[in-house]
Image 1 (cartoon, rainbow, N blue to C red):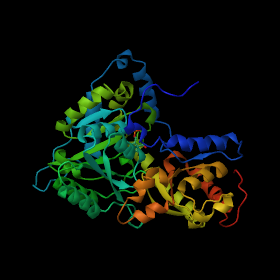
Image 2 (image 1 turned 30 degrees about the vertical axis):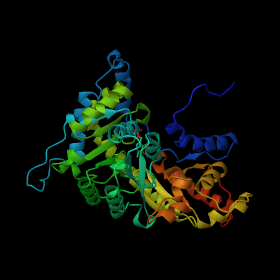
Image 3 (image 1 turned 90 degrees about the vertical axis):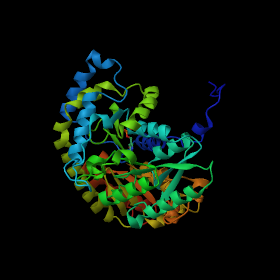
Image 4 (image 1 turned 180 degrees about the horizontal axis):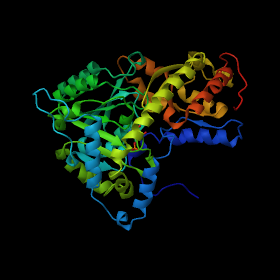
Length: 457
Ligand SMILES: Cc1ncc(COP(=O)(O)O)c(C=O)c1O
C-alpha cells in the first residue's frame, strides 16, 4: 500500500515534534516482547496508578447509560458541574475567607468564572488560539517545559520565549529573566512578535517544582505590569499542601489570571477527558467561540457524574495527596541509596532525577562509538535492559538549533541533558522499592559500580 498523499500537510504541523509518549511506549513493547523475568515498572506517562473512586465509577456507569447524556450539552459545560467546581476552588484556595488589601472580603468564584473543556490540553490550545495571533505572538515558558505546550507553540506559529531554569534553584524560573524578555519585546519595533502570556505549570511537569504562593504573587504582578495574561496550568493542584496560591483573593484577578485544570489526575479519570478554565467571563465568552468549533461540548457523562460528587471526593483527594507525598519520600530514599543517582527536584506527580555523570561517556559499555550519551540513550537502555520506563529530559527541551540558540543562566546545564523524569504517581510503594535493584543493575550495565543479579521478590 502506498503511503504517499495526493494533498499537503500544513507546515506548522509537520514542523511540530511528533508525540513523544509513543516512542517511550515502543521501548516498553520491546522490553515486554523479550520475555523478561521482571515485570515492567512503568513510570513514564503521568497516569494515576489507582482506579477512580468507587462512587465515581458507579455514577459514570449511570450517567453513560442515560440517553439524555448522549445529547449535545452547553459549550462551556454543565451548569451543575461549573457551580460545583467553583465551590471546590473556593474551598481549596480559601477564596473569600481573607480580606484583600482594601480590607474587603474578596468575592467568591461562581459558575460564570468556569469553563469545562475536553481535557486540560485542549484548554491550553483553545487559550492560545484565542489570545495569540499566529506569527505575531510569543509566550514566556520556563524550561524544561511540558512537551504539549511547546508543541502547541509550533503548531500555532507562536514563538516560545524560553526561560531556562537552573537545578540549583529547584528549577524555578527567574523572574528577572522573564522581565528581561518582556522589556526587550517592549523596545522592539512594530511587526515584531508580541508577548501575550506567561505560562507557568505548578506543580511542574516535568520537574515537580512547586511554586510558592509568594512567588506566584510576583509573577502575577509582572504579568499585570506588562499587560500579558498569567496562565497557570494547575493540573496537579490537588497534590499541594494547603492553598496553591491566593491570587483569587485579588479583586482584579480576572483582568490578568487564567487557571487551567484537569480532572485527569486528582479525580483519576484521564480517559474521560475533562478539563477546566477559570477565567473572567469576558474571556470565557471568546473561548466559547473556539470551543464551539472544536468540541461543541465536553463529554457529558463524566460532567453529569461528577457534578454532585465533588464535595464528597475531597477526602479521597486529600488521601491520595498524602499517600503521594509519602511515596516521594520513599522514592528519594531509594534513589539516593544508588551510587551516582540524585533526585534534583520533586513534587506533584513527578521526580526529576540526575543519572550518574559517568553515563555520558559510557558509550563503549554499550558497544557504541558515539562520544557522548544523552538522556534518551539512557532512558532507552534503562527500559530495554532493566524494565524501568521513564521519560528522558530531552523530551522536555528543544533540540538542535533551538537549543543552541538558548541564552541565560541554566542553559549550559540544560544542554548537558542529564535528567530523567519519573512519574511516581503511576505506581505503588512496592514498585518504588523494586527500583533499587534495577538501578544497581543499570549502573553495572553502564560500567558504573558492580552489576548485581536482580531477583523478583
Ligand atoms: C501540565 C499538564 N497539563 C495538561 C495535561 C493534560 O491534562 P488532560 O488529561 O486534562 O488533558 C497534563 C498531562 O500530563 C500535564 O502534565
